[in-house]
Image (cartoon, rainbow, N blue to C red; front, side, top):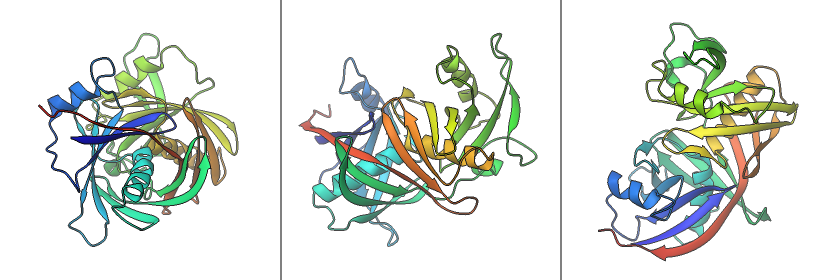
Length: 283
């Protein structure tokens, strides 16, 4: 089977062209190939297929490196837009993808930034409605206090955000605390996040810049996360910390997130980089 390795700000993907070849996703196989020591290694596997819906150009299946299906992937959308265009699967520069988390659209901007093609994706309307995250709560608030039962951090405050996938945003004074992974693991198994959750630790630098670290469900800490960057900006904007356009600094580089506010779609702009093409045995 042919594949392509790509990344956006170090958030890396194995891309399978299911339009031109047959591929049946298998959880055990994905886990083996996703292993960074014994396989190829990636944060997510992206499987592009023909769409049977007129509103979308393609259907996009997303799998975390543990083999579980994911509903949405912002950086993966950026990379997939570049991939389908370069593979001549479409001549469009604005491309719509149907995912489990909803319809997303990416536009190729052509400019080269940070070693990759600049791509902008519109990732839908962020929500803090608990049912849209999902998050278990009888009321809709901006933030909530949760008891984690940890000796080092018994209680935390967070803002749950739905981006087509679930996020929990925590604001902090330093992006280098030692117990972030412990907190993230506790949140990802917390009963109030029935589908688990992607966790963002955000530090406000000024009204146009934030810094985040992201722990993705099924993948662990990643160099960058597109929907995580969007969730962090949405939470920060609702809390009154930032303006409309925000540069989001992550370990892998900087993304630009633009959000007018409630009931409006949020956009992500970052470089999509093609690393190499290869072939691998399926058995």
